Image 1 (cartoon, rainbow, N blue to C red):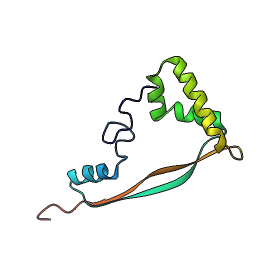
Image 2 (image 1 turned 90 degrees about the horizontal axis):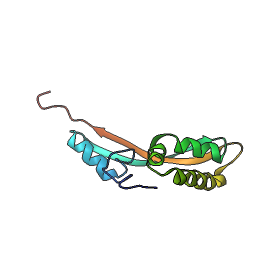
Image 3 (image 1 turned 135 degrees about the vertical axis):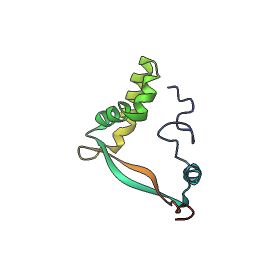
Image 4 (image 1 turned 135 degrees about the horizontal axis):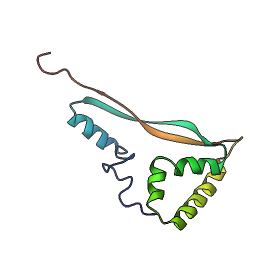
Length: 114
């Protein structure tokens, strides 16, 4: 599958703020100060089974974007590979995965004279 710069810090897209230093840079440029970036995780349910979860992940968001750029035979292989990779996470009628993100806090100082 053609990934090009997909997911590169600072590039357009869902992962553009994956680097905490980039988050601080963007907020600082917007006038914010005291920025903290804390990693957080949370459990999530992604589908009823591996096939359902693979469909969700590949038919929306970044998965769909990548699949649209791939040849049809690559799409089928990618879907099959992801489905198999998700099988170990099937548990009690659901695919359960831990999600990760940033908890970002910052303060915008008052404008001078306020």
